[in-house]
Image (cartoon, rainbow, N blue to C red; front, top):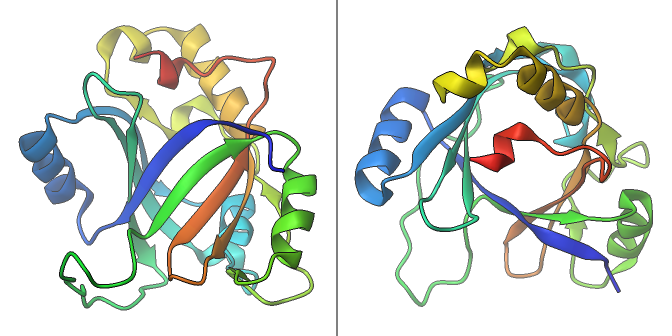
Length: 196
């Protein structure tokens, strides 16, 4: 049994961070929390399945919180490489789901070993080299808190960077086409980004 700790976020791949942020602010009242513009991170790239030339992956990420919930949206815009740009719209009874759902777990390597043997799931990359990867070191100048108090709190920024640098994750797809991310974050350190 996986040791799930909590729900982490809903990922949505978009073509414009600004337009998507505005859309979810207007639609859901989502509050922007943390922004990573043109983020290049080899560990992130490998964990997402980009094992060939992971250093060339360029993306922007914006985390938003849906008010009165513990639900975060992770909006990602891939600048490079570009993926399929067609959006498939589905009826309520069509099989499939969002781009990925993320669950935070304990012991990411044990979770990976269980998932890769689980019937009906497929890892995002079939290479024997694919595994959970930890993000490379993230510095506090690579992101901006969209809350002025947090942005001006150098200790909070450094602590959030330290937490981000210790996150490990991997992706898999279930038999219904739902893409999942399992991630492990350090238990000993609170992320100020999640305090809002």
